[in-house]
Image (cartoon, helix red, strand yellow):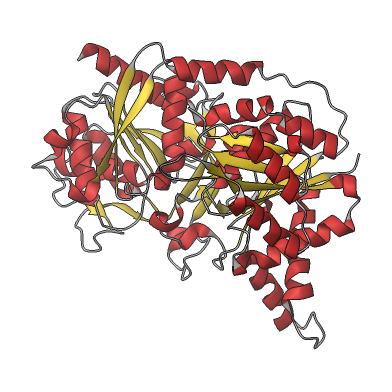
Length: 538
């Protein structure tokens, strides 16, 4: 069987959930026995989101092979439970850089370089590249942005061309569009969707399916109008309603017949899906039979919750596994210090300090870590959070007044966190950090970490330049800090714990990136379990 291509576009407004739609469809097709891969095409000119402020674009999701990608790839991995690669993320910046590099090398032999065919050919090359490697039956490609945006036009032209290059039964287009509700009357309107489809038609793309995004059920009248004016069968105007919980979307779309429509259009002969495990997970998430735990997320980007999207989802997964709902108390670390930390964190059952960069809000993170340590509240430090846990210990338990990371205080007398040696000569910001999956050896079997993993060697994803300074291993160990995990060559400290605390764990890597709703990451499972115990003992 030839590889099938499904292209997902968005219309009317941004933020409609194209990524969730693509991820949900991927799950439904996988449960029918198909081998599915996903890809995101982003129109921004940045080569990747690695140098972009999380407050503008949300979190940077890192793959095993070290690609810094859009947060939608996190949705893909969580829903489909497949590890994606650098080929799964394509930006305009990557495409234009590749074409201009070829021009400088003389590959075009003096020809004028143009958007068509050179840019579009490069885009198509990266789409077709997804067919290589492990066998695949279906490739789902999401086009970032909104139909009508100038910057998206080269991507749309490229997928139009693919629709002409491949047999009709091997390509289909799904358009996610907003059904507008008039304030006051509550009347639904399809006209914006009609105009969005018309915009697609002007560039030569006829949508096969229109996903009708709405909060309320779509009327039959609306579906008939979309069918008539957008030139699709009525059953291909599929309601895509807001779900009570995110992971219910695949089940709702299965009920609406999305996967059946797709399989019919692509002439895929597949068995009925087995959604038992996924349904059980969703029901467990909805019932939460053991109440609620509250976790304080202390970060510098809390104004945009998507900045910590994978952390939030991993906390949710930990809640599902422990039969509790996780309530997050969002704490801006920039507004936190020793004078108000008790008031800000009072009553929480756990504290998580996630990753980040720069000096803003650091003092608040250190204050929250100290408060959690002294009050025996479960503490989970991730990347920067782990580094600040080391700083806090050095200052208040090891007698190293003013200890800090050299990233944040170049003149500190005790640089307990320092630049990695291989980073010394790096002069470019993009894609130059320690990125991707690396092994870690767990040294102590009596640690909370080993209790969670039950493995001596683990593989986790990293995104950082600074590390635990080995010059302070002895002093910090003697003052009570437990160095639990290291790199196989023993050069990098990857995991620290406080053995005198009920649950105090800091990790240099990003475990949230590997958590799945049906396969919770062990550290998030144990962190929420510890928070639950704290709640019950309070």
